[in-house]
Amino acid sequence: MDYAGRRERLRRLLRRQNLEGLLVTDRLNVTYLSGFTGDDSFLFIWTNGQLLLTDTRFTQQAEEECPELDIWVRPVGGTMVDGVRRAARSAKVGRLGIEAENISVGFFDRLSARLARVELAKTTGLVEQLRQIKEPEELDRIRQAVWQAERALKAVWAALRWEKTERELANELEMHLRQFGASGSSFPPIVASGTRAALPHARPSCRPIGSGRLLLVDWGANEGLYQSDLTRTFLLGRITAKLCRLYEVVYQAQQKAIQAIRPGVSAEQVDGAARQVIAQAGWGKRFGHGLGHGIGLAVHEGPRLGPARRNQPNCLLQPGMVVTVEPGVYLPGFGGVRIEDVVLVTRTGHEVLSSLPKTFEQMILE
Ligand code: GLY
Ligand code: MN
Ligand code: MN
Image: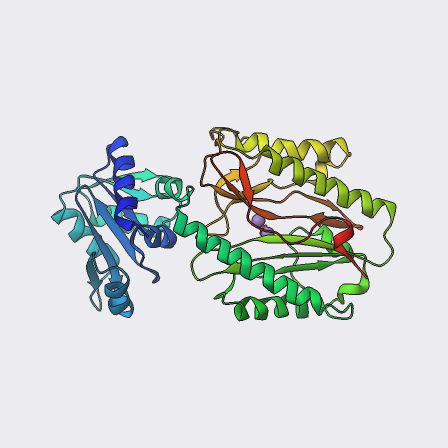
């Protein structure tokens, strides 16, 4: 990964905001800019240098993972703010950006008190903006995370028995994810059967999966650094007309949204393509979340695919963005359907990175 190139792109963004430096405190932003994967560490970046601030748990790891970086190790009894203060002084930074979405009020107060002569400027989404466009090596890793998730589901699917509980299924999924090389789940799997499928983020319970007619599974792999996030909804037993219609509406909504994905289209337009199908079916109010989100180092990152929000410019899709497309309809007391895939925005349109079966007929469990 070209960490130096990423830091240069960040410096260009800093210059545009008249910032002489940025204190990167978000763990994944630190990883993105340095390759360092430890916790509780910061990257101090300024016009012509960078310093990784860490503690003794990570001294060797930092030297191995980012040999080209200068490293400050917090002494026993010292604080991270000491390191930031020293770095700001030696780099002669007068106006320092901080990641406003990430630091606590307490840390901000301590920083302000100790860096009295430095102007702290709140920034939002600077590194996150860069992270939205994936490099080829990142795409390889996301593809790997998708592959691991798909293999794990296929293994669970092949051994599915209706008397298994939601929790057993979730545990089996996690075991298979690891067997296929993932470091674990990208988030605790959601397994919701029957009427519980109406809970968009249900926690797996001890209910047997065969006790209803729907089985919603939302899961993903953490490949090590990069994440995947998929959903499939299975249909069990006697398929009623309402169930069939519900599935088909969500399926069509997802198809329409995926077809709309190409560079230059707004995230709102893609969301709208799915929302329109669901609204026309009379279930507009039952699709209560956004259509999807960017995915990469984090399961949820930019861009957000959803209706425009006040004071937030709607993002235009660009090649290299990777997003989930996950329309859902949730009917309390009945159940819910969500279908989620991972989609890459290409120069000419899009590529769906996930390939598990998802048509109505394919999701029927005998
Ligand atoms: N699994 C969380 C989501 O789909 O966003
Ligand atoms: Mn999901
Ligand atoms: Mn998702």
